[in-house]
Amino acid sequence: MLELRPTCEHCNKLLPPESTEAMICTFECTFCRDCVDDILFNVCPNCGGGFTPRPIRPQINWKDGNCLTRHPASIKVVHKPVDPIEHRTFAKAIKKISPEWR
Image (cartoon, rainbow, N blue to C red; front, side, top):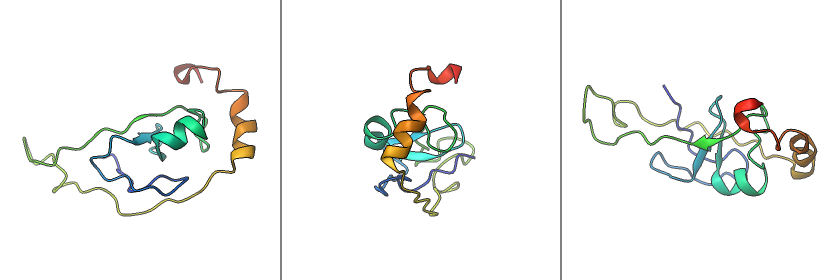
């Protein structure tokens, strides 16, 4: 089950479950769209992969209890600000490679 983390790992911006600003990598590292675009260059600082918009879990139980009330978002904050200079060096070599080929 996708964790739906509540904030951006870098800037700590609130990212509620319905946020269209939340971006995740394959390991569910969660960042806001601004940080992904302006600081991370679409390179996850934890794994080197790319980001995709985080899916939005339905609030209403449309079928079989698959909804936010039965499967709530995480309340655990993961705040690990990225050093922009260090990340720029890390991302420089791989940001030109499309995420599906990294």
